[in-house]
Figure 1 (cartoon, rainbow, N blue to C red):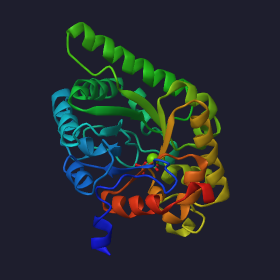
Figure 2: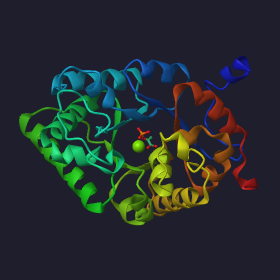
Figure 3: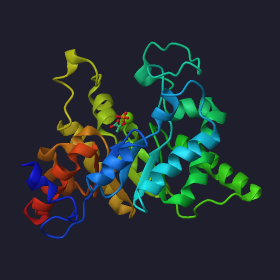
Figure 4: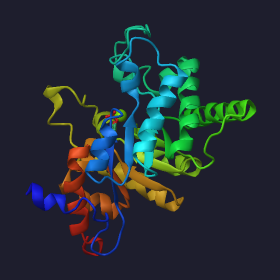
Length: 297
Ligand code: PEP
Ligand code: MG
């Protein structure tokens, strides 16, 4: 079985009828990039940047972040690396960022909301990402976008950082894709509007399922309700993929369900063209992609 799978390491991620569905890796550390490469991932579909903050004793400065991002970009050797900007919140709080306790942390000041509340933290990360972008193929992704205004604001801060670097004479890539996580139902519902303003969507089915079904992803008592295959969730996935296709942008999935082979036919038919999974699942999913015939769906 392991041996069989290894044969898919250098295969292309293409279905029997020639549809390319990239199989990328989710990573949560610099070292994970090596696992992604070792498994033959087509790129990094989600780099959770939280580790840089949660594993540190103090706020990581710009230089430390440039170092981490550029190491990953270098290791990936030109393959696309989607870095998600900071997604921490009331339950995931580093000691040096005193944030008030929130009654309902999943619905509170997390991710992009926190970044807007802490503009220097956000700016430092974006500047570091831009500076690292010369070392590979970087894409920047904003988490927990729920309103168009938030996307506008995030893009405006990014633009400001680009302008600053330009004035400082610091180089950065001109070809950075800018995208967003679709993990809040409002973003999926409004995906036709969002699609006009980003280069890609990556659907975060972990949170999208939790918020759509109002079932805490970590609460065992409601685990039976939490279902990636629920029709309401699938409709949002399909609508999002359709919006992306209509605007000529790519749409992937980076939630755990990207590794559920039983959902692959639905995702492929809906127009999902990238799946990002834990490195250990890359080969299994690539095999499933190569065995799929989308004309038969
Ligand atoms: C998701 O919500 O599906 C996702 C990929 O992000 P995280 O699991 O880090 O919340
Ligand atoms: Mg999420």
